[in-house]
Length: 294
View 1: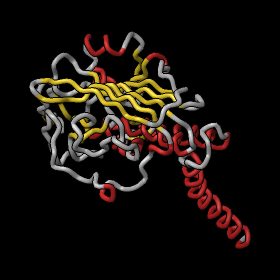
View 2 (view 1 turned 180 degrees about the vertical axis):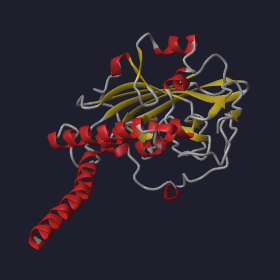
View 3 (view 1 turned 180 degrees about the horizontal axis):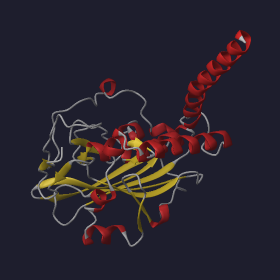
């Protein structure tokens, strides 16, 4: 009898250990940059982790609460915004929208050197960015931290800046200095200013829209991460970011992101709404209000 009890206890301990080790291993495989996205082992691991994320979302976790609801995301889809995005706009279930079936007309088969081209317009007497086109490669990537390249923190404020701090949830502030073309993607391109004080490349962007990087919460960083992985595998990427404004608003309603890699392994066409749970934004002037339920 004692021997059987010991055997059962040993088996239980082994099962408990595996229950801890296996999810960690699966997570490491799914998030590995050393395995291609087409690797069967990585694909299986990604399915498992995505299912786990869906379970977390359905259970009402903090991450789920911080992801904009469909109703909030659609609040910026006015007739004028929809006209700029086209007729094929589909909710992705994770805070953003898929445009044109996730297909883009960008041509990645170009032979020029990496570049960034920024366009702007003047609204209410201020210069705001509109479109940024880029051709990216591993050589355009910037791996050094901002401070070491002189692109650290700045006191400069883009047009419509009205910050709020000490918010509940994952994002404790309302807005960021949002890059159209990110520092890590193009910070090594000669002649391009990747700093957070470049009025041609920086606009007011909610913290969620800028930073969210999960399969269940797809902000701009989520899509930039996909580009970084492809660049690190020596692929070239055509990338375009178009800020979608409703009329003469000084704050964009969201960011239209399009990318295609030279080998076809990466392609997306999405709209990330410039919203954040718990906040009401006046896009005409940038004023922000914390909702009463918070």
